[in-house]
Image 1 (cartoon, helix red, strand yellow):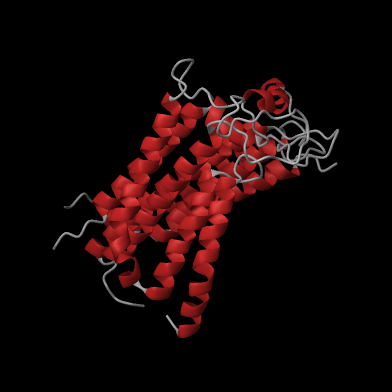
Image 2 (image 1 turned 90 degrees about the vertical axis):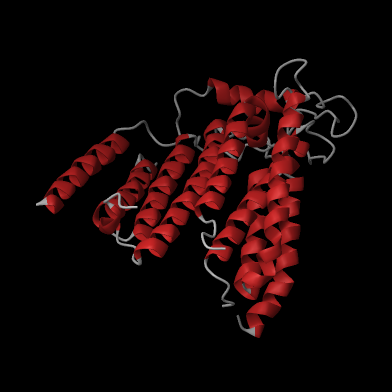
Length: 88
Length: 115
Length: 149
């Protein structure tokens, strides 16, 4: 019984995902790329960097990277707390 | 022209991970299913930023007069990969502790909140 | 592990560390950056664990923890360098000093002395990732017991 419910849920999710992907815009033709064209054209002048992805990660979206570093730190602390030796 | 095939392939990857998540009881296999879902989503994000005939968005020895793919999805995918790595480390640590305490990796045996 | 694995590991651990350092150092010119290079260098720790057992990496837990803390602090300090304008402002870009050479627009061969604070942030995040992933690997090894397999 429970297995049939799981299978029905899986089929519903599968149909919606595949239908949504099939009805998406054509591959290789993004509609909104104003911001990305700005980054590609001006990151050499503003961040003095050839690598546009690095310029976005560390300069334009530095707050994202700060949160990411915080998540990594939290994960390490969590692993250290979970895996502590209980007896000695 | 390949149409929408890359997006559909990413969704097939997500569905494979979802099947592992729903129909498997081993906790390690559940973690592997979550990683497959995450990789499918990352692939989908990178495929979203592709421009027809584009090159990698790096100006070092870039070919002149070539379109560049969108860099923002790639940067956010980098963030997503690192966060997925952190969550995977945490999930595997939980799996190790559950195996130490229960003696098995069956997910059905840990639904009760016995201490 | 067997002597074959140990011999190959003795050759490959410095190569992995060197390649990780290269990826971090050239993060603002070529594909790569702090996270990717840190992950490559941390894979050397996993290779060390697989080849030589738990006893080889037992003493590395505290240095990795200190390395991760220092990387995080250096990243935040580099962010505070630009507090006169905004947080994370790239003050060193184009200033002519360390990593301050301006970049001509368009395709160029790539010069190491560019990027402002970005190469320094790459190093900070790279050390942070080396410390974090290395600490996770060492913690998993220590929890599994002291058997040398």
